[in-house]
Length: 430
Image 1 (tube, rainbow, N blue to C red):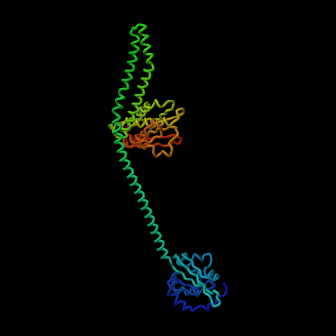
Image 2: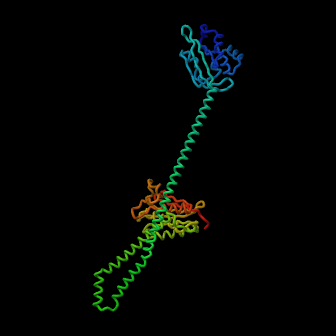
Image 3: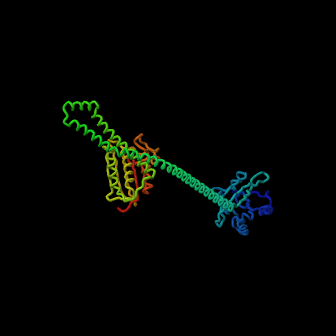
């Protein structure tokens, strides 16, 4: 780098050493040729060299970058850059290593030293070893992050627990409401049950009486009356429009029968909803009950295709036959009402999966709208028009399957459209 700089203007080395050796930071003076002309004891400790060895190396022309091997000097000499720039520099968190390979972290200051003509003739480097501080800072950051993570985990746990408590509270409130509602419904159902049973029980006798009256009238006309008397009775019957009256009375009787049957079904649904009807558990043949349900909804089927894909083995559960029959009838009714009467298709499939009997009732209708998916099992919720549904069908299905039979029921949109009603019940040996 040219001739050795004129260092006569610098203070004596002994004076500099007397001050520098008191510093805990490494201090080095580097001339314009990047040769170390002074180093204090702290710098010697940082390099891992003994004092005598350091003097030998200095006598041989010791380079500043050969000792600590600072990362900042790999692309160029920072001391030379300070000399050329003639203004101080500072580098923080610089990696370095001594001759033994021990690594450390340093903060390095470069201060240009100038003569009387303001020419930079050397650079004072102060090197502070912050390895221990960095380790402490790293540990502090580690424990701080750990504390933050623990705090976040605790906050999540608190939020989850709070949510669970709110859900439990909601369930308790809902259970209390349902219990009150069940008691109210049970009372109403019992009040309706007796008069409806009275009406229902008298519909068939009424139809019989109407037939007897018609036969009596017809018999009167054939009792050997004279033509004049027969003509007189016939005129009276025509004036009263007896034929129409008898036909209309039969229609009224059928309406009574259908209405009474409808109300009786609703009362039975209400009683099951209110947990008022109890039967002893028994072995239930799934295929037999499905066939009963198919017969029950046969009048609703029309031209809709009904496909049966039963398992090739008997399937049985321990439960309540009438209640399961009601589940199948409700699900089949919903499926039949969901499809187009002209091209509708309903498929019933059964099987065994991991200790459960699985019954799947699928249709090719429009499926379940996303906005009502979470409400389909709510009491009194229905998408049907007034008079076609009570909103209890799926609620009762859920109670029968989940609560009475410890199974599961789910309604899902099928992969090719339509709806799949999937019921799983604990199996028993067939």
